[in-house]
Length: 335
Length: 282
Image (cartoon, rainbow over all chains, first blue to last red; front, side, top):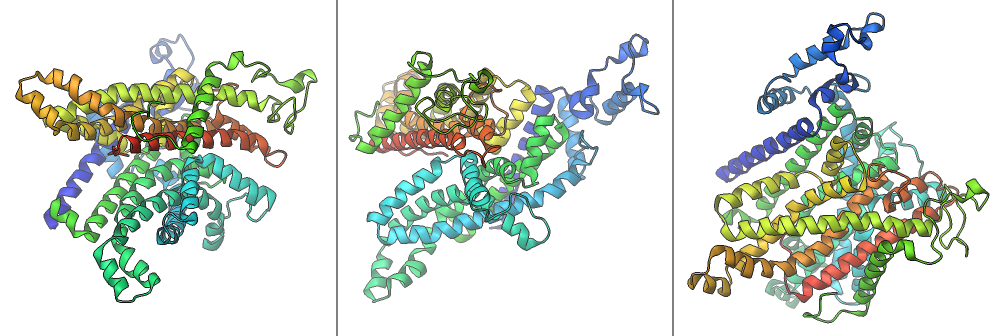
């Protein structure tokens, strides 16, 4: 068991290195690394400034440091004259020490920005997953209990429909119904205490959670139907146990495995969805910060956000993988 | 559709397939549809109609907040979804299909290397990756978006093709071909790849649905094709501002998306079942 965990952790570290390497590499190969560090002044031609042919933009403002000084310092600090793999090494070292650079917009450290935004996005994910699982389990049990009957058939159509609704359309429609039309919820994000925060998360949570609930429900229903054909279910029924008891005590638990696996994978969809949902419901979370940074070309925030999001996703799947093996000893024996 | 070999299509699946055909034909021949308005004509600038009009005989779906005809914008907006998803399907199935079938057949180090790269790319949530690459490229016309989406579609197809090729490689006709000394390249092109195609086709439909949703989300964030070009995602986004006045400009493109994605999933599901194959990834 210990060897198994060690091997998994080694694989996790390798994937994380590759993922951060890809993000960093893309930033430096597809974009101009100097621009990604200092912003628009990267276009100043320092040779011409030194020769006195053109004016230095910020050097002209009172007390401002010359652009070329800033550029030279950035080159030194970020080792821009070194090869890409070496720069990645330096950058990784900074990240491990918690330094993600500073935002172009307000010079705030990226770490602080992410530290402030991330908890809200995580809370949104948690609410969404709670809604999804809370809906999916009873729904799947009810559908599997009377499989191929009208309720089950209607559920099939309903789940396919839910999966087909784009998160932004579902979000806008929920926003219209509950905020504009019936005015049950406020359009503002209320951050005063945990209760009002949770209340603000209901609609966004539903937007992310409903499609996920549909996916979970389909999987769980299929697994429930398979388990219902097992001998031990027949045995339990023959002993005269009630249907509810058999369903929840004997059938549900061994049917939960696929759900657990997909739980991790669906996080990716939710992270993507949160970019959109935070926009619709004005939640000042990481997704919104990322989109705004993209629009403003605020590369330090984009890179930091992408690294955090990808790392989070990889770690969640790693945890699910581990959890899965703990629940089901068969996987451990094979793996 | 090409599902003739399997079970018959249900009535409902036929409707779905029909809707897809209507969307594709409408997008291709949008310029030739009689009576269809210009999608960028802003009537109110010329004293011809108002903004956010309700549906009427003149504008079957009403007008948006720039008083443009919504029906026309939906028909033309389908072009964006169509071009992006078709590019993804073509690039994914050609490159991803080939790489996947190749590494699933030859195995060994090539397999380990390519699949490691695939795993790393798939470790990013799709929308986040798409967003980042589009930003870095700094250009947002249809061709760039389609190329990026197409490129990012290669990994999932590779995974599906590899899983199928692994299964096909163990079949008796591949053994037979090996036994009589057929060259490996011939086996790959004559036996492995043709037998991966049905699975890839079913996957392509389901993946096209995913891609359409992805492009929709990107457009909704205002990061896909630039206005005034209509796309279903940016139509919903534009309508969001005036929800209090008129909700229909948001509803129509959403419905178009839901029907299209539902139909792709339904027809893809039918293909998958009728070929009795299981998509192994995603």
